[in-house]
Image (tube, rainbow over all chains, first blue to last red; front, side, top):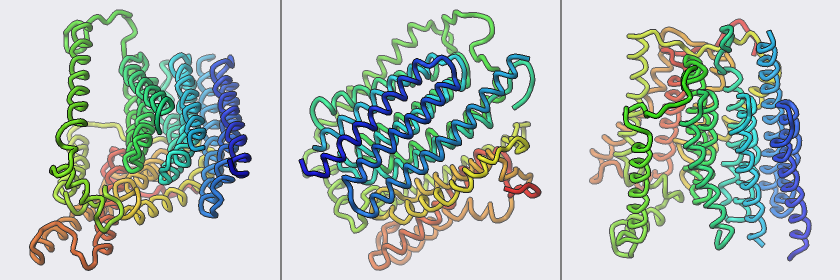
Length: 98
Length: 90
Length: 327
């Protein structure tokens, strides 16, 4: 195993662990908003670690830039999606209360 | 060495399938939409691992497109969710 | 991918696909059924990626999960929330009137028959060297264009692509007829409760999607991509603009929109006629100027596909930029 692999593999493994934590939160948390919270934070962090590990392994400027762009876009898209769904859920809860 | 990345991709796929339980059970529509959100990030990671471990570098472009689609799905759901039974808001 | 990992991967994907498909028709709520349909589309795209075909994965993801998902969600608005009906847990009869057991048995038999047919084809005479299928595969792989999918679509089977464009145009005209004869509700979400985050997302998504679409179009000749994926991505951007109210429906179809809808088919017909007149083999790419011809054809196809998909989603004769509100 080359030295690069020694760095890349643990990063990818940490990313997978974060993904597992996100799924566990999705299944076990009691409320929609808390599930949303767990999913967004854990999954995006997991994706970040996996992108970092793959970028370390890749090494070319184009590949690293592409992975960085993918992660940034995923964070942005995840943020906006989570915000919109949470707002919809609050509005739905208000509607059911009245 | 590639096999370990493919194993990681398999692990993410397991996560995906387990997350489907929330899509099935989730009492509200927002919980089901969470499943779509889960798919957004997990499939991106699985595709990236497949691209690097399985030897299909073009899959990185597919992952880029998936990221945007997740946001589009959420916007479509929020904008187009059917009105409540009690009043006709959209 | 080989061995145990590959088999487990495939089994998980197939199981997830089957489950999502069954649930998307069995779910009680229309909204949940549509979300499961989007999940099915995304899983299908993963299957294509696993099989090593990025072109199909892109097309399935954008159209199956993105645009069709949005289309079905907008159709949900006109359905009652509980499609199984407020009363009645038991539905012993399928919509065609037969008992549920018979329907399931017939579907399972058909599925097994198709699977057996596919297994026979995969191991049959078509895959041995010297047969027609093998010759076609070798020719596609040895083509001057690096991407065998594009080689087949534009060079070997240009006639099929021509007919596809005709079908797309017809698919665009059919809702127009419906709209003229019935009162279909247009997709018109009001932008009143727009949040600044959506504006920021659009501001970031537009250049990314346009650049990615242009890249897919440019790279389609030699790498996975092509006119269809690029056009579908631009169509998804158009759908996003319609959803967030940046594009408003209009009663007339403006001239530029009509031109966009037709330019793909027109360019392809022109290419067919020119090759029929100037060369012995109609609808095969001319060897000098191969790249230029492919690029021009793919560009026009991309524009037409994008305009068609956005218009199909709009359920209106045309669209125009919404004036009066700051994006």
